[in-house]
Length: 253
Length: 337
Image (cartoon, rainbow over all chains, first blue to last red; front, top):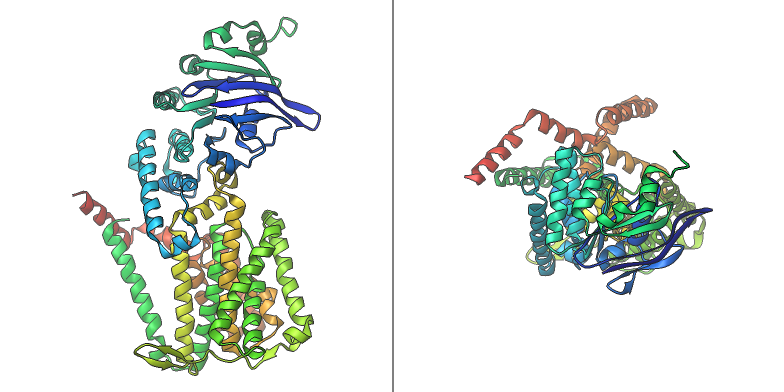
């Protein structure tokens, strides 16, 4: 589904991501883990087009997407969330989803001013899609609320909902539970689980190991921009290099 | 909003419209009518600036430039080529939009204050060109004798002339209503939401598949069109144009109207234009000190109602629960059964 090949990014003299390759298969949850500064978010930025790779290529269903702009990557079917919860906080909850679904519509300026049949039909479709997403993320009751009244956890749900409303084939979640309480984290876990049940391909950056172990089909471990391990959660948790990266080598003490 | 709240709102707009329509029947002073006409034209310009500054979050200071292109367009086409005013108006606005589109391409690649400065430069350049290209624009003397709009043949009403101030008033009002109608439809649509998404968070807007550059360019082009339209009508009603129409003062006035009225609201530009014009008229007796009063008021307003008069009104409604709001709540309860 999503294939990353030899992805490399240099910031001046700093090699942030070095020849990283991995594949996310259709319908699986792939976790991207590693210590702080390992280059996980940079990998997401490279896939989603926010950054241009120095070398390497990303393929979605065999089609290369390297070098495309973020909005083009989103149209191809890769949606992402950001590490700091990012939603349109000046808009209402429903409008967040409507605007995220706009990339699947084709009405232009003239359609909008004249409110043509196409415009109405597309608005109906977008609304239906938005309500579906709201139902899924459990915010149906708050459709018309402004984002300001949402709790932190609800905003995280909405951020995932905004990504879902773009109609993605692959979802990239950057630390979806960062800064949440235990029980709130469970809620987001549940959401990702039901996404998986629906056959969505999910790549997730996560620090909470319990979540990684329970949720991920496979795990890719990065350290200093290199991929140091890949495999099932069990395999990875027994890997010498991974343990060293997380707990420090003998010489570090 | 509940259904009855919506109806109440519509009633309020209809009431305001009724007042606007009745004004020339009651007010006979040519002076006041003239001020209102200019108010409406400036409200059109401010509304179009609002699309860009208020809804798309791009602080453009080029607006007087586009107003001037519309004004000179109409003046040149009607006096030199003898083109019918209505065609000239439409063409001048189209030229303004085209210029907006073309200069928008390089200019909108800059962001924030850089964009503000780049757009300010454009406005200044238009003013210099208007002043210096004497053979085309009449130089600093400008163009005199711009014709009034020719009579309009309306079915069932006969020819409608624009000699009288009242007729001019209605034409300016019609232009304002047309502008507000287009803005209303734009803003209350997914396309309008994409404008606001760019204003709110450009990074996220791009991530959800919005071509942010195209959105900004579209907003800029539409805003230029309406600024040109306003300029064209202004030239005809003033019967003359000079490089003054491209002046920074004019443009900064609109920015103040917008900020005081409430950027990012449909009513804001109209409220701001009318309120400040009224204020300027009232403080005229202070002569040079009027600017001082004006400046102080601006500072106070910016501190205590940063979202403008319309923003303050909305906040007050929320806090006090005005009849309008109580009505809305009843409406919701009723709808639920």
